[in-house]
Amino acid sequence: MRAAVTLCLLAIGGCGSPTSDAPQTSLAGAPVGSARAPVTPFTPPTPPGCAGASAYDACFAIADATPLEVRARLPRALPPDTVAFVRFHRASGTPEPLDLDRMKFKVRGGGELLLYFQVRPGAYLVEVGVDSDGDGDPEGPADDLGWSAASPEVAVADEADAAIVDVGATPIATAFTLAARH
Image (cartoon, rainbow, N blue to C red):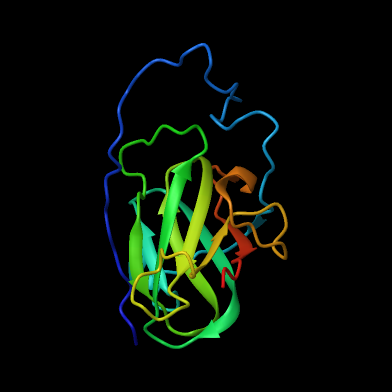
């Protein structure tokens, strides 16, 4: 059984006051009018945190945070141990302490990544990439990439088109498709 990866990364960010040309935001901090990713309630694994998440390709858990399951559908099946990454971007653009900045991991293989997180409530854009060209780097121009999307079947390869995943206090799941870039 594969051990789940537990990471606690601190995003590096500065504090400041909004400027007059900053995008208008809603109460959740997300840009007004941004598309929302579809979410469904789900039952998180037990025990809480990464201890119960051995069925997932990767796990990042903050104690007492909201469970979030992400299914990233791949354009082609990948062999085991392919390198991948995930990033959570605050829709407001301002990272907070304990946000997941970047996590690199090896996949179990197959046509879908199953990822488990426990994150602080907020509005996020989720980015996932995989090393589809086999060079060991999942962030090259020929690698498959995807962002949280308004439709799980539509691949979004650009942050400007990404949909926001609204995380509150209830465990949720979302899914999106990665775009083949070669």
